[in-house]
Length: 117
Ligand SMILES: [Zn+2]
Image 1 (spheres, rainbow, N blue to C red):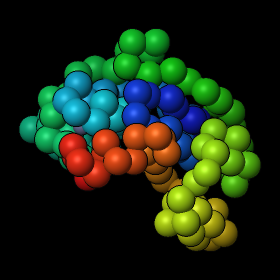
Image 2: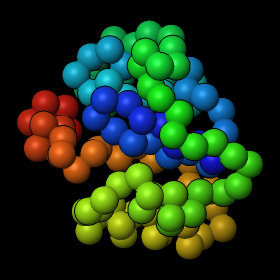
Image 3: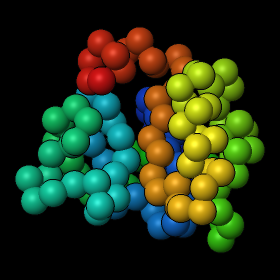
C-alpha cells in the first residue's frame, strides 16, 4: 500500500507505486497511469497534468508491502464522512483490491464541491 498527501486529498492505493502524474489544475490530485488517457487531462477537474515530483506535488505518508487496512484510512483522515466510511468498508471487506481511492480532506469538502466535484 501507499498513502499520499497532496494539497486537497489523501490518496490510498493497494500498490506501493509512486504516483506518476499530478494535476496542476484546481484539484491538484496525484494520478497513476491508469487514471489518465492520451489527452493528459485530469479526470476530476479537467486541469492540466504534469509528471509528479515528490515533495513538490505530493508527499508519501506511508508505504509498505501490505494491503490497505481501515486503520490506514483512520490514521490519515479524522472525521471521515459517512459516505467515505461506507466506501472504504465495502472495499476493504472484499477480496478485490481497493485500487486507488482519492479522498478529499474534510476541510476541503466544500471547496471540492464548489470547484471540481
Ligand atoms: Zn484535477
